[in-house]
Amino acid sequence: MAAGTMLELAGASSDIDTSDQLNMFEAFQKVFVVNGTNLKVADFVNTKLNHGELTTQHIKGDILTQDTDNKMVVDFTNTAKTATYGYVIAGTFDTTNEVTGSGSGTAFTPDVGINGMLTHAALTTAHAADDILTQDTTHKMTVEYTDTAKTHTYGRITAGTFDTTNEVTGSGSGTAFIPSTVDTSPPLWYDWTTYDTNDEGTYGAMPEAAYLGCRYHGRCVLSGNPDYPNQWYMSKVADPWNWLYSSVDPLTGVAGNLGDAGDTGDIVRALIPYKDDYLIFGCASTISVLTGDPAWGGERNTIDSTVGMFGANSWCFDGDGNLYFYGTGGIYKVPLGFRSVDNLTEITLPNLIDDADADPSTHRVTMAYDRKRHGLSICITKLADGTSSNYWYDLQLKGFFPESYPDECGVYSLFYYPANNNDLADLLVGCKDGYIRKFNEAAKDDNIGETNSSISSYVTLPIEHLSEDDDREGKLTSLTFELAGGAVGGNNDTDKVDYEIHIADDAETVLEDIKNSETAFSSGTLTGTGRKNRIRTRARGASLGLKLSNSAASSSFAINKIYGDVKPAGKI
Image (tube, rainbow, N blue to C red; front, top):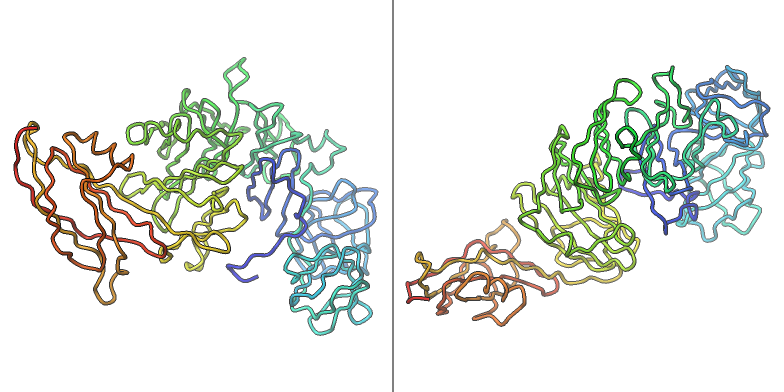
């Protein structure tokens, strides 16, 4: 499908509990969904052959052959032994000829069907489950589902090979169509289990529940089992279906906790892999790191024994491999190498944790590195209603900038989409109302679905002392603004700018007046680009603060320069 477009994985509809915690990770061209006791796989590489129940299943790595020309490498057989998934390396499997394997698995004919997807124009009426689609009398498909857009119909092809020339009709009331594309390896959706749940002696057992997952060193890693919150589990290397723990196999599955000898260990809240070099465990009150493979000389060390991490998604890496996370005392940075922890908000935002008042049971904290804008988005969202408090951390300025979004845009997830087409690459924002949005510098309003909302923005400049002598006041006699824009082909012209001048005998009073929206000593509105007429404001005091703002719809503001005249005045 074309880059930048989305395809509904319709089989997943109503098969995920979105009221419960949910995490996903990519491995082996699949997406593994970790949703408590609901563990699933979205498979983008395999073909599914449906057949009668096998006496003996084909094992991972077997080569299936049909009519000498069609070949498949087996990846997985379901527990019922009625479906085999694998990567087709030659030919196109059919429902007529027998399939044999290189191992001891039973031969079969995929008479129950080969999973397929027919792409077509939007149907007036979708085909229902179990409808029989027929093309040219000899090609047949049993429908499983049609996506919401009614442009893709999924099912089991039970006879023949569909083409893009002839009309397809159905046994139900669905609209007839001519396929534009026929695909016998569409994305698949199925349960994530061990290869054979009845044979723990060969394949081990997965945890009964998990809320955390990642890929590390070629292994699938799970944690967050409510019954054993201090425990982590790893599959066998390159085998998501094998969780057997062995002392003689260097690729074996592994399990462990993060405590010292005799200690139960801390509660795991986040799994954070960095390439195949490090796996960081973000816990409730500690941070640890695993270096290397745990079954082959790996080593675990504590990074910090006093700092904890908020949750599964409250972290990100920047472009240099430094880790940032929202933790028990603010926002932290762990430089590449993962040996120390620095609190970035200890001085600049000392009350961040108390002000946000976020709780893992009611809030989601998400963080992401925005490659285009060279900074971090930090979003603290209340799950119930989407209310949020957010921050932009500019990596060039090393400064935090508070942001708030409409409740409809409360951020539930952040993901940077690294498309090959730079026009499509961007930070994607999953919002409370179900929309996926992105930041747009050209837009002057926030999109909240069917309507737009004006953006209220402001900046308070550093408070200035008006005299070199701390015991004396100064007098502001004039102020001149130079607004941005006006040149042909330059930056966008500024819209109006509202300004407020606050003055007092100490900086603290000025700051409180601005924060509490007290009446300004002087205020006004500036319009147009370039240098404005001098403002003959005469304000006497020791400290001066200047606030600039704009909250009008479809507008933004930018300032090039502000300068003024100050004269000495008397004692404070």
